[in-house]
Length: 97
Image 1 (cartoon, rainbow, N blue to C red):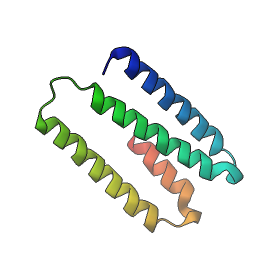
Image 2 (cartoon, one colour; image 1 turned 30 degrees about the vertical axis):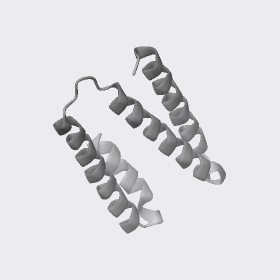
Image 3 (cartoon, rainbow, N blue to C red; image 1 turned 45 degrees about the vertical axis):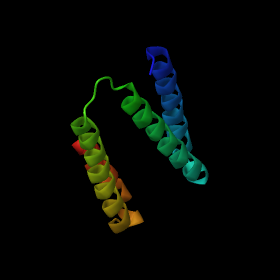
Image 4 (tube, rainbow, N blue to C red; image 1 turned 90 degrees about the horizontal axis):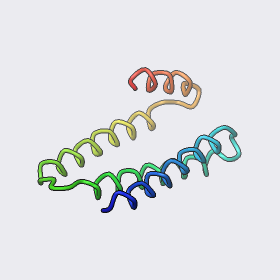
């Protein structure tokens, strides 16, 4: 993938992230905000994978393992945490970043 195409992909992903933050700021638009966030992250991951040059099988395996582990932990946490504990969950996730 060319550098210009990757830059455009990252720009589109960034715009999606901004729209996600805007959508998540109000309960009525939170579904669309969440959707924009998922679309932006998907674009960013695809661009990052396609931008790899001379990557071996182990590199792709590590990327897939990271996605699986992170997605699995996020799925489990999202299913277990009640909505009333959401501020604490967000604070805990921010402390990990």
